Structures are given as C-alpha cells and as structure tokens.
Amino acid sequence: MSKAGSMSQGKNFGVFQFLYQYGTLITVLLLIVFFSFAADNFLNYNNIINILRAISIVTIIAIGLTISLAVGGFDLSVGSTASLANAIVISMFVWHGQNIGVGLAVTIAFCLVVGLVNALLVINFKIQDMLMTLATMFVFQGVAMTYTRGATVSQNMIMPSGEYATGKIPDIFGQLGKVPWIIIIMLLAVLVVHVFLNYTKHGRFMYMIGGNPEAAKLSGIAVSKYRLLAYLLSALFACIGGVILGARVMSAEVNSGGSYLMDAVAAAFIGYSVLGAGKPNAFGTFVGAVLIGILSNGLIMLSVPYYAMDIVKGSVLALALGITYYKRNHA
Image 1 (cartoon, rainbow, N blue to C red):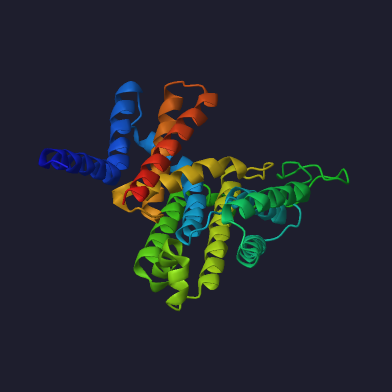
Image 2 (cartoon, one colour):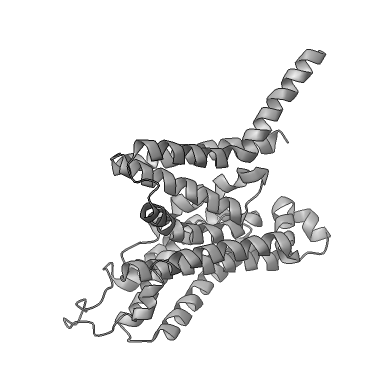
C-alpha cells in the first residue's frame, strides 16, 4: 500500500475513532440545540425535569440489563420482572393491607427468585442467555398477569368477591415516584453500578467473564457464581424499576414493565460507544437513556405521532449496534 493510501486510511480511522468515542455525546448536544430552536420551552427547567423523570425508570431497568451484559449475558426478562414487581408491591398494599416495609421486602424476595431461576437455567442448561431469558420473559409476564387476573390493581378496586379493596397505598411510598426522589434514586443506581463495575475486583471479574469466560475460568474466577450474581442484580434493578413505576402511577397496570424493555435495551447498547468504552457501562447506559429521553420529549413537543416514535428509537438502536459491532470486528 502506498504511503498516501496509508495516511488516508489512518485519517479515516482517526475520524471514525473520534466519532465512536464522542459521537453519542455530540448527538445529545446537537439534539438539544435543534429542539431548543424547533420547540418552545424545550430548555425550560420544568421540561428538563420532565425528561429526567421520564427516563428514570428506563435507566434503572437498563442498569440491571447492563450488569447482565457485562458477564456476556442478555437478560430480556427485565421488563416482565418490572411488571411482576409492580403487581406484587401494589397488591401487598391494596389487597393485603401491608405496610411499606413488608410490601417492599416481599416484592424484592420474589424478584430475586426470578433472577435465581434465570441464572440456574442459563448456567445449568448452557442455553444462550438471550434465548433462555426470552422464554422466561413470557413465563414471568404470564405469572404477573395470572396473579392480577389480567386486571389493573388500584385502591378501591372491586375484588372477585364483589367487595371493594380496603387496603391503602402508603403516602410515603407515593413519594418515591415523585421529584426529586425518583431522579435521586436513578442517579444513585447509576453511580453505585458505575463504581461497582469499574472500581471493584468483582466488577473487573465480571468484565473478564464477559470478554473471555474460558480465560476467566482458567484464572481461577468463579464464573458461575458471578453470572448468578449478575442475574440477581439484574432482577433487583428491574424490581426497583417496577416499584418506582408503582409509586409513580399508584397502580399496577397489566404488563406495565413490558413497554420499558426496548428503551432499556437501546440505552444499554448505545452506552457501549460512549467515550469509547467498548463495553457495557453504567455511565454510557445513562447517556443512552438521556438520548432516548430527549428524542421522545422533543418529538412529542413537535407533535410527531406517537406511533412513529418506535421508528426513531429503532433507527437509533440500529445505528448504535452498527457502530459497536463494526468497531469490535475491526479492533
């Protein structure tokens, strides 16, 4: 190859490397500039808070998905787990008259069982994570719908006996779904997982397993135990997302968490390229969620029909996947 050709190839690679590292952040800034001119009040304080509130649940669920991706897994059941958590926590208050401590404890316990089931099936049967969790996604979704009998769980609902439910949702529980707590919980989740994955040996072990499980096993790392931990944490964060969803709407809608799956997957994969990380990471996932949130909010303010939103989100995800895998294959 000629010297001029080598220089041209090196220049092109340099441009691609720059876009790979900073393209997502640049896109976020360009979207902010565009929507600030195209839509009135986009940069209004209240609208910024609305964006952060809107992405809070998605971010929390996506953080759990990010942990499963770190070990080379792919937990597609996070949306169904959030639905189950939403149904259980609200029903504990409305149907069973429990206090917030008992309601949260029972909900977390059931969701950890979900993570345990996912991990045992994936580890013991050695089926590809995405395929197995795709199956369990439908199972847990069915469990949530069967438990609620396909109905919305809310205060003063009519029970099968014909009587009204007498349980009340605690006021303090409802505060979890309001500003500033919903945003604080999201930021804490991002910070905790960022520190865990990047600054603890357990996080580094997870990345090693995700990069090369055989080499990690030969290095003495307990691969199965860390994969189990990853799925438990994934279920836990999906649980937190479902609980916060319940606190925000003060009810449990049918398959309420399912609608968050696509956005969570998009946020996690967009995060791969943030600052050139090249791997699942909490900060990148947060930036990915912010990007999706800005897009959704801005398009709504421009009166774009809701049914066109998925076209935009799908295109963004396809672009993120294309950049990530191109970089991986040409590293």
